[in-house]
Image (tube, rainbow over all chains, first blue to last red; front, top):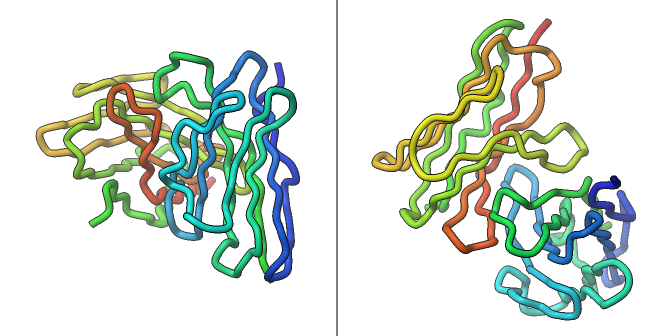
Length: 115
Length: 111
């Protein structure tokens, strides 16, 4: 049973380019969460999605960041016009419906470097 | 003030020692308390969770929650080099899906 999959694992973008991060949840999971981990800081919640719905995006920066979880395919976190401050590790977690908070399973992360 | 405070360490102990990790928090609504282990360049992996106050033991690991002091602890007995990792505490209120994480404590167990 494959776990949460994220790709790419490493992504290098120049300032002003777009970054697309993908997350495939565990089999049977329909809820996806994105977290960002800055150096020397803990993971920070960004957005919670269910299939075709954004449930809570209160942790997302107001500009340049968007997320989706289509009916088919992986969840996508999109960062437009990247800046140096976007350099971080981005983790996706998934859970099944009705699961308690400890039921989130994390992927290996995508490490974004903006040059 | 951060919602969850965790001493980042680093912590270095000899093999076989007891590792003691802790976090403090400010949100009294938190009821779920989790400890994650994160190896370098990997995602967090759930070690243990506790609901409300009390102790929980799982093999060499013991988690304690003191809600009156807003203080949680993780103890690792008979530590092994394979325990070398970053340990993250995380918390959540009931019916909330958002996890609030500490910054993580980096632990090295020397053979």
